[in-house]
Image (cartoon, rainbow, N blue to C red; front, side, top):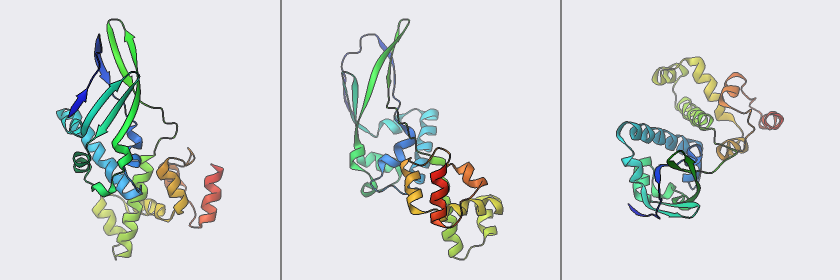
Length: 212
C-alpha cells in the first residue's frame, strides 16, 4: 500500500468511519438482494477477523490514501477487494474504488483525534435485504421440488419461519428496488413484514407501503 501523509503535529489517534451499512450497495455495479447479502456476510466476516487478528486483510484492500486539508481520498485495489469479498471484478462498481471522506480534528486534553465520515440520512436495511435474498433462495428450492420441512431442517429453522420469510419473494420489484437503495419508508422493516406480510397483489403492496 502506498500512502502519502501530511504532518499531523500532536495527532495520536485516527478513527476512520466509512458508511458501513451502504457498502454492499455502493460496491456493486448492479445491486441486487442476493449479491448484496453475500457482500454483507463477507464484510461481517472481515470485521470479525480484524477484531480478532488485526486489520491486515482490510488494509490490504487499500491501494493508496491521500490526506489533504479537510479530506482523505481513499483508493481501493480492485483485485484484492474482489478476492476479499468473493465476487468478480465484473460485479464491482469502478466508481466505488475511489472515494473521499471529510475529516476534522477534535481536541481532548493533550490528545488530538481525527474523525472522518459522511452522514447518510437513509441507511441501507441489510437485515431486510438478506431476508429478501433468503426468500428467493427458499422459493427457488420449493420450485425445484424441496418441501418446507426439508428447507427448515437444512436451515435449522422452523417450518413456520421459512413460510414467513418466503413471503418476501413476492414483493413488487419496485418495492425491492426502494429497499435495496435505502429509499423505503422507515416503517418497512423485516420485523414488520414478518408479523404483517404484504398481500400478493402488487398494487395493494404499493398502497400499503405508501401509507407507512
